[in-house]
Structure formats: C-alpha cells, structure tokens
Image (tube, rainbow, N blue to C red; front, side):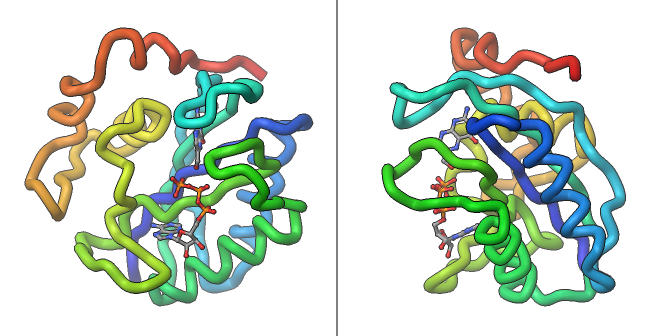
Length: 164
Ligand SMILES: Nc1ncnc2c1ncn2[C@@H]1O[C@H](COP(=O)(O)OP(=O)(O)OP(=O)(O)O)[C@@H](O)[C@H]1O
Ligand SMILES: Nc1nc2c(c(=O)[nH]1)N=C(CO)CN2
C-alpha cells in the first residue's frame, strides 16, 4: 500500500463543492482510500494575482495505484469537474496536485515528486502540517516545520482557516 498526499485547490464557485466532489470521486475509486483531510483554508492567489481567493486543503490517501496511475485519476477528476487550462496559474474549478508519494524523489516527464513548488507554498504547507507534522521531505531532509519557518509572515497571513 502506498501513502500519498494530495493538495486540492479551487477558486471558482462553488469552491467548497468542488473540493468535496473531488474527494468523493477519489474515494469512489476502489484503489484509493482517503485516510485524512485537513481543514479548508481560504488563501490569497499566488503567481497570477488578478483572480479570486482560493480554497485549499490537503488529504492523505492510501492507494494501490502507482504514482502515474494516481496522477491519471486526479487529472480525470479535474477534467470531469470542468477544469480548463487557459491562464498559467489562473482560475480553476479544481486542481489536484500530488505533493508526496511514499518517500519517493523522482522527476518523470509528466510527474515530479515531491511537487516542485511544495516547499515554497504556504497554501500547501499549512494544511499539510495540520495532518502530517511528522513528514520529512525526501529531497532535503527538512521537516515541514522547517519549510514553514522559511515562509514570510505576509504569506503565512494570507492563509486563513475557512468556516463552511
Ligand atoms: N506532482 C505533480 N502533481 C500533479 N501534476 C504534476 C506533478 N508533477 C508534474 N505534474 C505535471 O504538471 C502538469 C501541469 O499541471 P497543472 O496544469 O495542474 O499545473 P498547475 O496546477 O497550474 O501549476 P502547479 O503545478 O504549479 O500547481 C500536469 O499535466 C502534470 O503532468
Ligand atoms: N492561493 C493559491 N494560489 C495558487 C494556487 C492555489 O491552489 N492556491 N494554485 C496555483 C497553481 O496551481 C497558483 N496559485
């Protein structure tokens, strides 16, 4: 059994429905079991700034899917939920990023694990730390706490727990 962490994000309404729907669709896959879910956080957009705030969260899954099969399952859900890739870093109904897969460290053409921008994104690190404070990054040996300490106060303040 493989352990993976998946980051979810949405900034097109109904944002929380897209998050819940994506999780339900992952759970419906017989080879995926959702083990843990973080809280939902409302976050200021990073990268492309002229867009609405995101809802972000992280889930832990146990899966018998390979890393590439899990990527395909995530991309299928993105497609079903109407994700369109028009603007880089732009608005999306749902984004599913594989953050970690076991303690793998690999760069394939279509899949990089750990996710290459994980370490610099408060909207990923804060929910990941909530459900997996023990994790050590396979690349750097850093704890999530160490990576969080490298994030500016301003960016940390742009991630706020969201109440449904
Ligand atoms: N760990 C990963 N999880 C998801 N996709 C990945 C990963 N590593 C590489 N990719 C590749 O990245 C491509 C672009 O993904 P996507 O359009 O979702 O990027 P994005 O969400 O806009 O940006 P970001 O990756 O910075 O969150 C995907 O087609 C996929 O093949
Ligand atoms: N706050 C926030 N900003 C983003 C997000 C995201 O999920 N949340 N995703 C991006 C590309 O994947 C780019 N910027």
